[in-house]
Length: 273
Image 1 (spheres, one colour):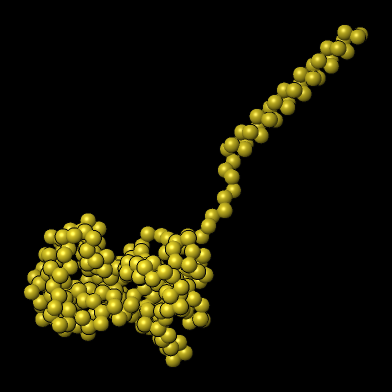
Image 2 (cartoon, one colour; image 1 turned 30 degrees about the vertical axis):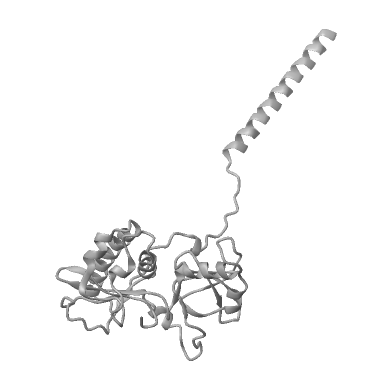
């Protein structure tokens, strides 16, 4: 009898150990196969690659849609050429009538486009990346019949923000939807708000709070620099320059269809220069 009890106790112990081992294995397997819950941080538009910008069309007609599609394809080729600093592509766009300044003091050679660090590339990038629209007021002799003249950037959505109940508060146009406003300049700055196709004022106090060389360097970079701004509600912050269009100083560009291809109508800086 004693021997029988000993065997029963041993059997129970063995079964218990086996069950414990199987439970442990099942737990580890479940833990490894079940993905851990993750807290996803919202992605900021200013931290994403710039999306394919909108192209405004004056009328929703099949003709305008066709023109928009044609220009969009050209604009994509232009963007690719800019990225690889393709001087031949740009030179092929220039006409004798291409305008570089109001006073005639500039031309393509002035920008030294053979240098891939030339400001020409960054200013052209900023202008065409912000979206283009039809210039319905342009009367260009060299433009092909029934073809639209295009201008970049298209700031009509920003101008439409000005209404009697929302007067303009500054000359800096913020182009884009939900553009981040940060407490400090830099992608690590805390997001304190956003702006969508609206005007803001330049914040001289924020500009003067930085060392002179730092502030000048950030303001000079048209794509990756930062601009101190003051919003309608008085809040102060910083916005990435690629979304900030200074109507007094930034470049704009226009294209016409001539002799079967797109041509550069003008590439103009601000201030009437």
